[in-house]
Image (tube, rainbow, N blue to C red; front, side, top):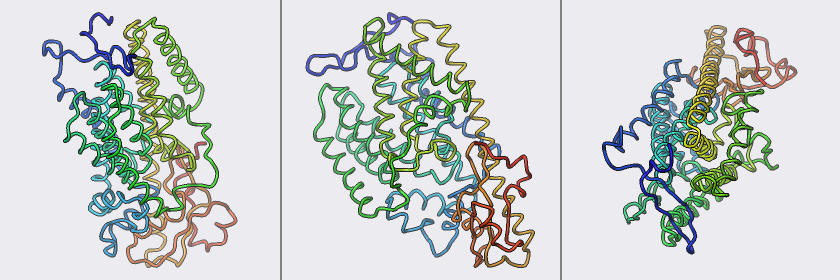
Length: 481
């Protein structure tokens, strides 16, 4: 579609220079719209629900940290369904887990329904936000790429990430309020509250919230809004102060994280899997973004893509900063660290695809369809891996019950090494196994251990040894590097 098919555009300026040139707005004439604004949001949400319903269809189960969270949830001595010590370190956790593990306990289906609803809300809000700065077509591409992309599946397939999903929804809600052309006190209050609760749920949203609070009013109205910055900043400082005063050692590591997988996770193997296809997709995305940005900068095409690609890069950077001293492994359950930064790569990819469609329609549509098919195939593969991990945990618990029908031994060892598919495992440490034991065998005094080598495993009595590989059935439990 040529630029002439869009309505008249508007420029936002700062110091007399265009800050976001040719911002396309969707036509308001109902004859030009297949769906109303609400209908478009509902369509995006429905697509997200359809995609995430696969986890429910496969049969949801708990894995990893879910088990000890469930154990707290079903423990009458823990009325809030969460370790209060951990909640001190992340204040929003009390609400997130209290309303999930504390209410639903060991019933996985409602947990997954909540995750699906959170993901649907985030997809719809992303469409709304992008649509305020770009064409509705680009916003739709961004939302669909976000929904189909498998590089942040932990927030839809792992109940322990419910607070991360809630944090993302609240952050996007706040952004949608401050991105309005005409600010209002009501919108500002909603944004401040949403941002504060978002960072209280998961503090990794703080840098992106700060970036959005300063930059978006500048972009939309040509100047920063100091009152809004002060109000949002006060909330973020309060949350950050609380977290620092109640710091939990699990939140960080001594050495700076390796970011070697940052670009592949955002643009390559995180989207379509490891191997040559992942390398090709990453190269195409990065080269495409460079060419589009260069063409926009030289005014060979409309300048709209340039600020959108820059915004995507800024979001990737701001979303990664909180994990610089954290275990940065953005695959499998570890892809939760991409819950905000992946929005940046999504925006870059969508901008490149939209530009291709605008100037070479057949090529652009072909590239978009090909990428969605590749991501969909890898998403299916990962969905099965998540389902497999849940099944493996159940198999181990059933084996323990069959072997000890009259009561458990004092100590139980699961190992000798973690077994995974696509880096998704049923258990990774002793706390995971202990939680599952406490859920399956209420009132037991048995202590569970996850051993990571043959020597440690051999120190346990044979009746107390539970080899995941053997129980899982050999090939079914093979490890993916």
